[in-house]
Length: 431
View 1 (tube, rainbow, N blue to C red):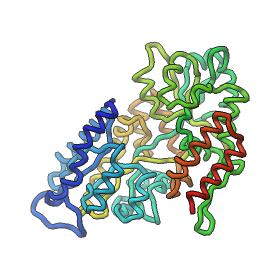
View 2: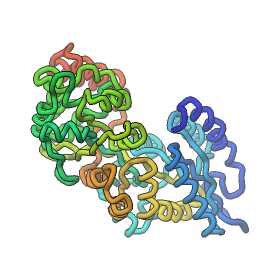
View 3: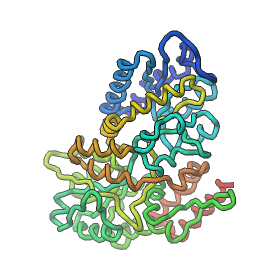
View 4: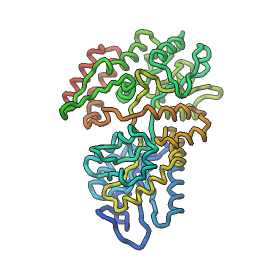
């Protein structure tokens, strides 16, 4: 894995080329198809950064180019930390890449400003049918599909297998996760002197709470008559209350994990201080790479409330509205994201492919080991969440939700006070 600072420096120069490359023939922006004697040239801005994922992306582009002399794709390396500002500059300057890699939660702004093409009419029905409607909805804005969702990140539970066995806690099947009541009861069985059943890494708690709230149909954001407001009822209180109870009532969750990120909990997890780590499905990669010899770990399915629903924020591929070659770009997307290729891309990022056949191929290729069976099955419960469609969500999250949730999980305010702060914050942001 590249050092983050070095990664920023490396891609800064590469991504700066996004603006400068526009002068090349057939790569610039503008309306209509451009006639020319040479091959169509497309620029593809990719945010892949992990070694295996980078190689998979570059290999697929090279294979396409070898098989399609009339449509040549140039791979341009981007970076998650700076891509938003770079894209804004490129879009406003009329010189954006033809194909853009980003995420559903971030393309809405560009979509509403008219910078991204509606790809719904450019893709085949067979291709579109591989991805569930709830996932397509995450990249649909004002009725226009402006992103192709291809990689998903679900919340699962990583557990210490030896501690589960010692406590008599059976591992549930990939398609049969515990209910929240069962999860809390098993956390109690796994708690003892010097160890906790769970470590909730809650340094940045808002997205996790918003995601898991869907387990109990907690929406937080409600729109009535064109106006959106924050409401905190029983459904919205369910997840914060259960986590709080594990921290201070049953005392099955470690208080020291509150200020940690997911990776910060790993030393304690490997040392047996925590039996279970709720976290991203991508955490499995760190298990494989960092677990000490002989350490046995398992991936448990998402915990269920009235459902196992979670918010889906897939990585997406979009086509620039100003691209002269939208049809050719869509051809490349269907190739790049065919089931086998999508499975390879997901494996490289330790994420979940959106396509049903890609999921099946990934499980078959990995024989379901390292939690790939659980990861694949979790895709069926991922869908669009209300907070993802709210323009003011990032500000509300930063200024109001995160501080309030941190106070609540630190036991400094009550559940009702938490609700009041979240609602009042909504009134300030959602005007």
